Amino acid sequence: MNLRRRSKILTRPRCEGSREHEILDSTLSLLASVGYDRLTMDAVAAAAKASKATLYRRWDSKAELVIDAIERAKGAPQVADADTGTLRGDLVAMACHAHGMTDETSLAVFASVITALHRDREFSEAFQSRFLLPKAAQARKLYERARDRGEISPDVDLDLLSEVLGAVILHRSFVLQRPVDNETVEQIIDEIVMPAATRTSNHPTTSSQPR
Figure (cartoon, rainbow, N blue to C red):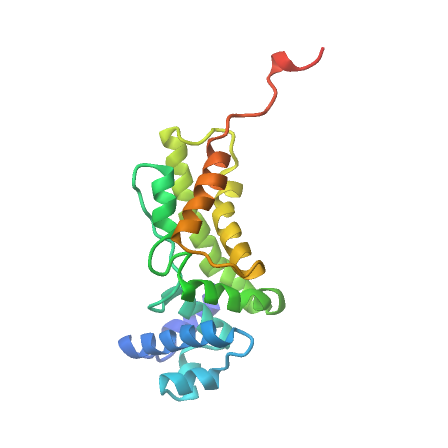
């Protein structure tokens, strides 16, 4: 967050406590139902029974309001930081919970912002820095713990591996328009993620190189 924006947030009158959360909850609900492109500050104000002036005293733009909602609203997408003792257990716990990767609202939120990520630079930058990168770092911890336990081959690219589960789920849901439930997620973990994580190194050794 830049200093100018932080200063404005600290000095601007804020919606208080539960009122702010009511606005964020209304924003997330509208986002999931109509999408980012069609969401307006007027619609949020009407849904939250607040004035548009109230919204603009707290948020400069639709992008800021939506990012806050995706971060902090009651039904916002979450990545559970589970430590079950095994990589498989951690992945299942991370994805298969309320507001996780199989939650209808969470999937609808992701679907609603896809076009905005390509068209709205302000939103895209904020979404990357305030939502995607922190969630990715949180997910990567699961793989780091698994590597420390010796479950993951030491030469596996953890950054690439940590993208696989979410990518397959989103592709199945948005591109193929097929349902994603807990059983499907476990199948993806068992048949794609775990084999990739636990494969033996296929890099040739020095002795196997032709002379």
